[in-house]
Amino acid sequence: MLIVNPYIYSEASELFINKTPLKRGKVMYTKVTTRADMDIFKEIWYTVCKEKNFESEDFNPDAEHYLLKNNNGDYIGTMEIGKYNPPFFSTVSEYYDFTLDNRIRNNLGSVYEVDKVCIKKEERSTGGVDTIIRLFADHAIKNQATYYIAATEYVFYRAIRCFYGFGVEPKGEKLAYEGFYLMPCMMDAAKMLKQVRKGLGTKENV
Image (cartoon, rainbow, N blue to C red):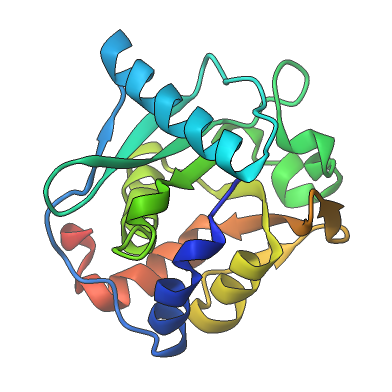
């Protein structure tokens, strides 16, 4: 389950409503490569889960894990991205069978599942959405991704779909979950990159 906490909606809404282009800048995330990094990832993730009364799903052993950073370089959040592999491991399949979509079924080798996205409570008013978008863009280019799939909070899904135009579309119905709604959705990587490049300038800049 992709969690983008409601405490960052104030920042996200301003970004989306004004359609502010994503600016080129320093990378604000790092890939988890050591056990120490993974310990930090789990500490942040489990803390947010406990705070929000979320039940943590299993970690995808084959996924890439990222730590989000603030301007000071402190770790403030997490993000997990792994190949969509429904016969063996998938957390989003609990909410929707994405293989029902021909585009997903015909591109399984380049479809990625996104999970465990969160921001620390004390950092939610200082940023994070732009870093998440930049991570998507960098990952899509590096891995030649065609689609991303997730089950995200409905409000965040609506913000991206209505205000930023990132080629995000719903799959199935929104689902009631622990006091809020989840929306299974998929994102077209090519459409997302096209929108991001409007702010970053050229392909080489992304």
